[in-house]
Amino acid sequence: MSVGVSSARGFASDNSATIHPDVLAAVASVNVGHVFGYGHDEITRRVERLFAERFGAGSSTFFVFNGTAANVLALRAACRPWEAAICAQTAHLNVDEGGAPEAIAGVKLLTVLGADGKLSVEEVERRIERVGDEHAVQPRVVSISQCTELGTVYTLDELGELAELAHRHELVLHVDGARLANAAAALGCGLRELSADVGVDVLSFGGTKNGLLGGEAVVFLNSSLSEGFEYLRKQSLQLASKMRFIAVQFEALLTDELWRRCAEHANAMAARLGAAVGELPGLTITRPVQSNAVFARIPAAATRALQERFPFYVWDESTGEVRWMCSWDTTEEDVDSFAAAVRESLALHPA
Image (tube, rainbow, N blue to C red):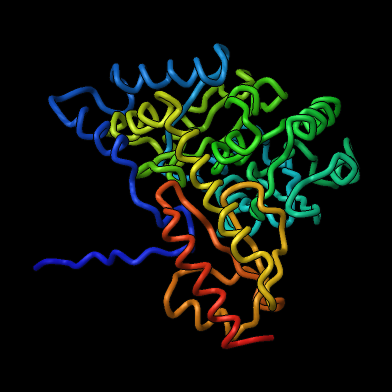
């Protein structure tokens, strides 16, 4: 029985995109012979060394299956049972992990509002309270999303300020870097500049949203946090037996800055889309377009009409805010066709 595959393209998520040909070629290149499993092979070790070159000689990297695991395991490594993580209310950690930080890591989340999804030093400092009080959960981690869930990007100075605050209070700075590549591309900096050099302690480095078949990496920049992590990964069901097939995808991504080229393209397509629809009557761009996401508010009838033709998500049903995501494989034709459809839908369904 054959199964048809639709060629429909939309703006629902960078998770919906195809796999980069270089990544598929890399997987095929190691699909020969037999090697030891569970990462005890030269391919995985080679890619771990490549991560150390990109993030710093003192870093250590562990591959896992998905982003939820990467974030939750980072918290498990950093926190004891009575400790908590401070994050934005809109953080993926808080709204899109299905309660996994609490259920799996046993870590309470202390949330703050955060303008456009970003934490400020002042907001974080207000959450560092009742330290030493045995009746209160103790703050241990400051966790940020880079890029944020609202498509915004922390500057290097903002990251440095948060790291200084965290370390002054003996806290750990964690970065959910599912779209770290998009942030680095937006800022025009390297991966190490955006992490180790500004004081990040541990991060989740995303690949699935940037051209990989599947796989994420937990990168420890503070070596004291990685002790025993191999046991945590196994205990949390995230130790891949055929590890080389995850690791080699990252080798493709980190070679010749494929990660940057993919992210720059996705960002450029979002900028193109934002410029194409930003002045349309009845449409309001609701967030700064800084990475590969465009957030907008349009009439509900226009949204429904558009969704009959293009997949995308309604971000906030109460306000009519929608999210349009661009990917490494989004084309100019995709953007222009969608922008024309938005214009047509707004004309037919004005506010």
